[in-house]
Length: 222
Image 1 (tube, rainbow, N blue to C red):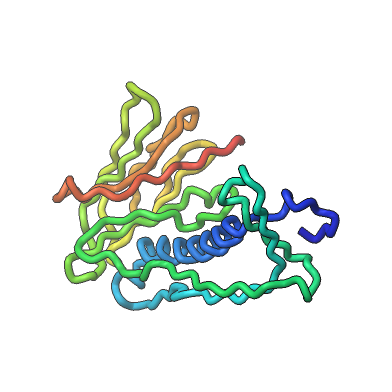
Image 2: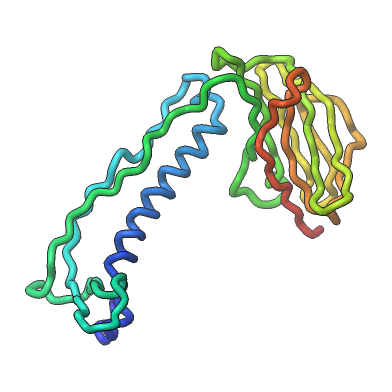
């Protein structure tokens, strides 16, 4: 929008500008919301997460109004950020995301430890179980479910136990598909066929209806 030779039709509509602010705040709120579902310290009350309460916008820009017949209503008002000072209007509005609240009740969770990582750390996962008192519960029997995409494909289930901190960490090599975990000495020979697309989730053994979300397993070429 820095080109002063822009035709009016190339200027953003007022609707586009308002949506851009709304989406920006929504993305920030979503990032905090995602963290709230996967951060054990927040879920157990040991850490506080903050979200944007509201965003007050005071914008100075030129407004071009198209009064021609046949012009779509959403195209009638366009915003010119390069307008001279004497032709600018003042726009004031507030963007408010929904309030953030932690999930209550017992649940089993899985998250990727290094979501933005590359290399062999991309499939590092953390599992934990939180009881009805919002406490991490150790030594819980769990089933890690590896589900391949496509009809007729058989899922693989790995039975194990959370450690004394109530967690279980493991890694799937993105090239070889080999399972690795410092939390357990077994299974040394567990391996996924990386020619397939896999998803992983976790289920509490004593309550099979309690299942986590599914996360994709990233593949990489050797």
